[in-house]
Image (cartoon, rainbow, N blue to C red; front, side, top):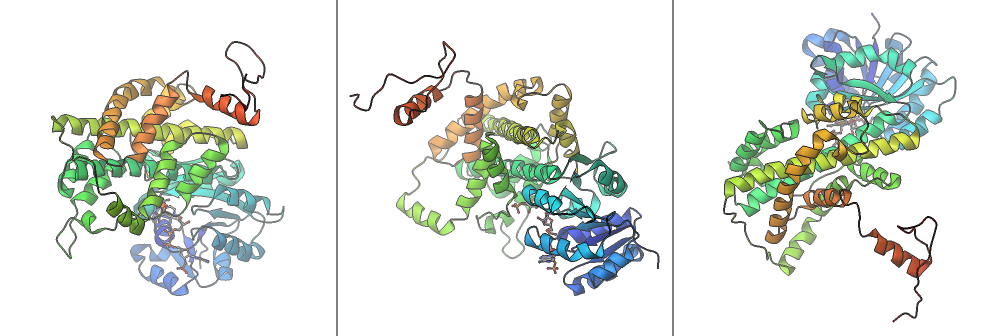
Length: 473
Ligand SMILES: NC(=O)C1=CN([C@@H]2O[C@H](COP(=O)(O)OP(=O)(O)OC[C@H]3O[C@@H](n4cnc5c(N)ncnc54)[C@H](OP(=O)(O)O)[C@@H]3O)[C@@H](O)[C@H]2O)C=CC1
Ligand SMILES: O=C(CO)[C@H](O)[C@H](O)COP(=O)(O)O
């Protein structure tokens, strides 16, 4: 039997669709899944692509079915299963073979896995893949971390299966070792912030303006034709317009208001903190999901503190809805600026030389946060390396207009008692960032008072202590 060009382990949601995508692009793919029955069901259901799929019951069979040197994609649950699979594969593979971990790995694990391989072990590549089920099947965004040599060997198949934006594949080598998985993690952190801000706007429209789900769906649908145009806004409109077949109610109205999370958003916030880069939108979004999971406590708290806010009655409803659109755009700009700042910080810290314009370009199609807005970000990085996207000329005008709307949205929501943690964090980030003289001089004074930590002065060089003593009245 003709050997396969590539192997793939893990036929879950992502792996099965990625395997079909690979086969559709003309490659023969050998597949293996821990639960063997799934492998055969997958093969049986592969339709006209069946002839390009080689189902394997064992890892030995999988390795034997691929033409050497073998690229093997792991698309399984992140964490310990990846270590177990690498351990089982290693003795079966040669030095020139490549194991590609395409799951949502923590980049520290990727670096550790790479460092644990000896010179005679196979090559290891950490690869972030975004786009969910549909993206995996028809074209995801692919963020690769590894050596140029390994990338050159696997890029023909990766660029073939990746999403295309204006004909360009949304796939790139972003740096060595953990760079690809780091960028995917921050992609997800931005995804969290984007989704949270959209949810907050939905909350204002539902609880503040009293709009029904389909009416809110129509608002998002209209916004998708404007500057907010993006996959997330598009699916938000579709979700809000969908009907639950069992009850006839809006589908969104029968869903429990507790958000799940698998780790990448939290890792983004942790890495931002470790690097000392403010990423308040991502942090607020992660915390909001955690708070949403405290359903029982929230029910008790609502009894203890009955809703005291007032429902919104903006004199000009249409104008307020315009403010919501512009405010959401401003919040989104701040969140993306933070995400890119975290990547710039990591690039410096780990000497990755991350290509930020390329990163924005490969996010324009295929991934969950895809939008034309990323084209503007790519151009901003092409024109220079702004310290922060908020300083890029293309965003100054947008933010000047958008921040005024965001201020109205946040203040109106706060007075009405409606929670807007990510939107308000974006506004505070913007206000703090554009304030040349902040209030941290007082914090420095306090630190010096209680811990003799010292401070710098505005009017001379050096380290100083203040004129305070503990018995000061
Ligand atoms: N779903 C999504 O939208 C996206 C997911 N990802 C990432 O892709 C990876 C796969 O996700 P997804 O396809 O959604 O997950 P699924 O839950 O659909 O599938 C999980 C796969 O992992 C396998 N697996 C689980 N535990 C082990 C183990 N201990 N040893 C070997 N194999 C194991 C499962 O095998 P079995 O059938 O035997 O249980 C199955 O093939 C994850 O890292 C995920 O974070 C990345 C981008 C988007
Ligand atoms: O990587 C993804 C999208 O880009 C996955 O869908 C991931 O599971 C999303 O994260 P979470 O489950 O924490 O919401």
